[in-house]
Picture 1 (cartoon, rainbow, N blue to C red):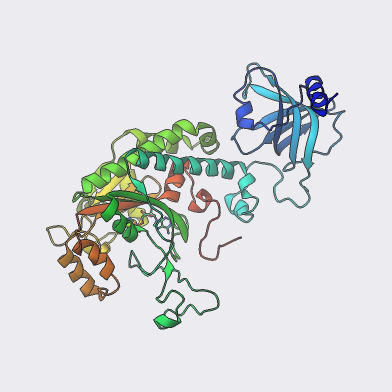
Picture 2: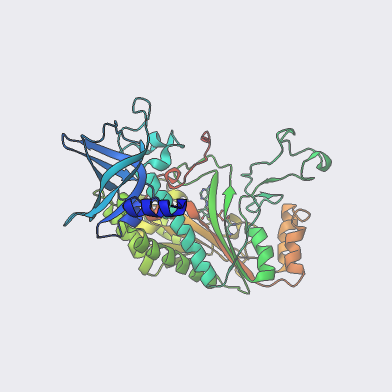
Length: 473
Ligand code: 4AD
Ligand code: MG
């Protein structure tokens, strides 16, 4: 008998053995009995005299698979956090959720997890601050895994939306010689063999000029919009910001969108609103299992309703001047006190404005020119700029945008006043050589995830948070 025939005969006799792994998520799609091989990490162990129950999870689903083992047959000491691979039979469980369980037959993989030194003893209720101390073990935590799956889905939905509208995705650079926001919150980039002293002359500097990590891809995106029309990027941005730890990170992701051939804030607001609505409504639909991890406790329902409302109801819009009036007429409810026309909204003002408007997302538009960057188009009143911020309940500012100053002379004049004409010569060229009216916005991707999941601290909405005095791994 040939070897091939022997293998075929062996396979016929052992047809119940399955060699390919099936994910837990895929197993939940079956309702009839079937042989399978499943891998996962143990999330709980309940050992009885006759049977042992293991809840296992392989990262494909927020819901665990229950594995049932005859206690007598398996002498292994199963503990929380260990990994196993097991062959067996998937069987229906009538009237239970999930509707299947797994009868384990052969243990083919087991790597222990030493419970005397593993920092987690069960999957429930560790304070986020504690979990953050173990960034390498954090993705195994139930809420963190759900957050990461939702983050991944939200990123996919953003691409889906902008591709469907024929925007071109551009990789804007992480290292740049420009300071887009002009706010001076830059991280310098130098090889570690060279001092980071930016006062060195150009020949001594690695890039031949000072370089920093980007605070925003906007200026590069504008260059691309002047050749491609509508463009966007979903890239990391870096800011050396020391304050506001719950909403600010030193490394965050930003969706930035730039539209050519527009002079009008309405175009920018409507594409932003449509994209946020698409992302939220689809996330609620496609990630229900993961969302339930965040919205299972008492008291979480009201934020869930707020998020749901955001997917359907129109966003409101007020002028900056109206915002100042609202704040100043409600000083009893505002700890930080009155504001003058010309002041920027602080975090408390932003949150108050959404509460005041019935927990709706709200655009505030036409800010004083002096509190918006040099690139914002000046309005005809000479005092305000064609700008907006999008505020969302409990989170505050989620996005900001402007129509860009497309008039060469006006832009050049502003840069002259700031002593920046040399540095931004290339940026003025975009207006000099066939420039067109255009505008765009940036949306904090991590703040969107934070909002959708009702997360309190932005550090719990990212896989590896970077913040002052916090850069683990
Ligand atoms: O309002 P910002 O600073 O706007 C810009 O950077 C523009 N150049 C964008 C553009 O028009 N292309 O930042 C945009 C958004 C903010 O509304 C906020 O949601 C988020 O980025 N953001 C941060 N998110 C986390 N951590 C930080 N340190 C952030 N700084 C801004
Ligand atoms: Mg802003």
